[in-house]
Image 1 (cartoon, rainbow, N blue to C red):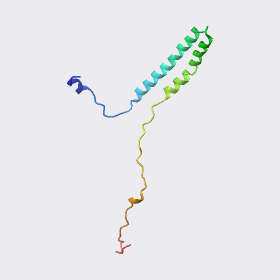
Image 2 (tube, one colour):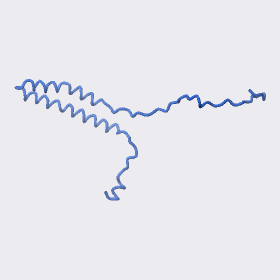
Image 3 (tube, one colour):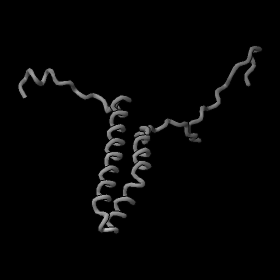
Image 4 (cartoon, rainbow, N blue to C red):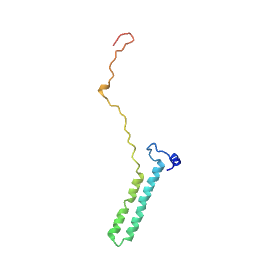
Length: 108
């Protein structure tokens, strides 16, 4: 790359997740691809009707494809795991009792 092209190229500074629109478009493409595989399976089953075991195999393959397509379309990426900062009780971190004066001027 030339120096002027490097200056125009944006720099990725975070690992931000894709936008909702990009994620939805990706899930739609997966759904359409999976459902698109069902039609050729049924066509192949019709073409191979003389070989009954192969035709049945294509029909059996095409039956669960809509269910799989819906599961894949509704699947979202997992949430980012974040480490939670929790309080842990350590006996050595206690404050020492200090002498306190009361209003009357006496010490406890």
